[in-house]
Image (tube, rainbow, N blue to C red; front, side):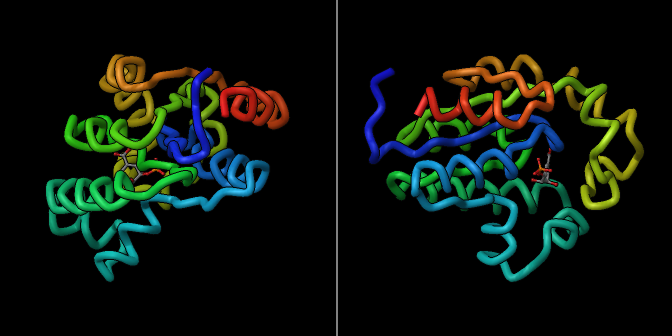
Length: 166
Ligand code: S3P
């Protein structure tokens, strides 16, 4: 594929799909900087994700768009987005300006078996929320992603697929 070192590699997908884990590993392999958007937002806003959500989901989404603006201005980084980044098309338009989007697709059945829902405000309602979000978002992930990689849990397979793309 025609990708250069200046282009960002942006990973999208459901909460618990492995975006942060694989993003970090990929960045190490490629000797690039890694940015986890949730952590980036917390630093930028001086508030935790849970605190932003406690104000309102919209408050968090606005912060997410500000983060996308800043990250779209960067070059050559690996980015793990928050799972809901596809809910606002502004995010996708911004992130596509400077990067390729990779949809890391993991089945909801696999996600519910090992995701820690207590750390994710949107999933606080319980594991069934994972299925609901998947149904709501699957078309958005397919549409936004330039590439799709399936995460069936084999770490090396996913890493190999990611590095082949990069
Ligand atoms: C969200 C996912 C979270 C975080 C926020 C909202 C979502 O990120 O951005 O809680 O809407 O799916 P992870 O996908 O890293 O859990």
